[in-house]
Amino acid sequence: MLSKRIIACLDVRDGHVVKGINFEGLRSAGDPAELARRYNHEGIDELVILDVTATLERRRALAETIRAVARELFIPLTVGGGIRTEEDGAAAIDAGADKVSLNTAALSSPALITTLASRYGSQAIVVAIDAKRALSASGVEHFAVYARSGQTAADRDAVEWAQEAEARGAGEILLTSIDRDGTKAGFDCEITAAVSTAVSIPVIASGGAGGLDDFVDVFTRGAADAALAASIFHYAETSVRALKEHLRAHRIPVRV
Amino acid sequence: MSSAIALIDYGAGNLTSVKKALAAVGADFFVPEEPGALVGARGVVVPGVGHFGATRALDRAWVDAILDLVGEGKPLLGICLGMQWLFEGSEEAPECPGLGVLGGRCRRLNVPPGEGRLKIPHVGWNSLERRLDAGIIEGVPAGAQVYFTHSYVAPVTGDTVAATEHGERFASVVQRGQIAGVQFHPEKSGEVGLRVLQNWLALAA
Image (tube, rainbow over all chains, first blue to last red; front, side, top):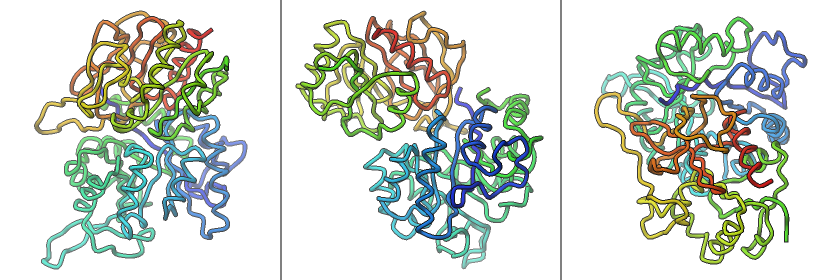
């Protein structure tokens, strides 16, 4: 039976992990390769490196970070953040990423999804969707898509955009609830289920992970195929291993 | 002439991860630019992801060069699409014949319809159910999980060493003599994946 995946996200700026508060147990605090090694040891199923570097010239550090992480890890690695062109995607993949995640660029030029999918295969293309609950013009609640790290309304509905992304060649959807991100109030299971049941490609839920039961919830009620979290894994008390044991106790298939 | 492992690049996906994993298990490998460069290779790896139609790039000259090596008893490993290509063909691209060294045809995963329907593509970690003892999975623990990403599958036949279930059972590891194939990605399957690559390399020793 296919396992539900647990994915750790490393927010990286200028070669250092910036999100997460407590790097206890790390020899070199903030070193992405060091953190990746620890997560791998604990049984993480996949890693995402999200580049939050502000300036273009500093972005060159990204390839070095990808290389350092990919050098010793033999699990899937996704790279996202600031991938705007086919060349950006190619550079990440050449450095060792297995998948690239497109967000703002996919919204402004959806053809980029198809271009990269044709070059590397759909399995290498993740479309990241940042969404929040909103009222449509007719007063119906829906899930509105935002671009530029949640700052600009994209005038798209998340369910419809996910379906379009799939049709254009995306292999997975990384769905982040802006309402829940950073709140530790749990994943938004409604938005996750709405998107996950509307597409046939896997949906990775993100935003709001606080406790172990939040993951049980998103894999059952939310119909998620995978769940991603960043800061909660940085705390030694919420290890990947403990999370998987908890999920298994709730009869959710995981890789142990 | 080369006494290294030939890694075939036919444009179906990026080879960075496969190269990294081969290097990690100590394999000496090269990427041949043309079929003639396969002469003398210790073994052949056919990787690949994506559409079966991509295997069209493996034309008669490549097929003959690979079959020559197989005829000399050199080991062959197909990974993902590369494994499917070892069979007679696939309904994904019926006009493209496979290498045909294994019997059977590949077809799309068939998942039961209805509520909570399983997704295609089959993406993620799933377990290997051992069916035969074979060198390729020596030392791999029972029920070990490996990383898959595919929509088409090879049938379970007498060559199936391990099967995996996603709506239906399909061949996830095959071996017949020096010919082996894995539907999963050993280069992305942690320690288990590296072990399988090591086992295959041992065939080339």
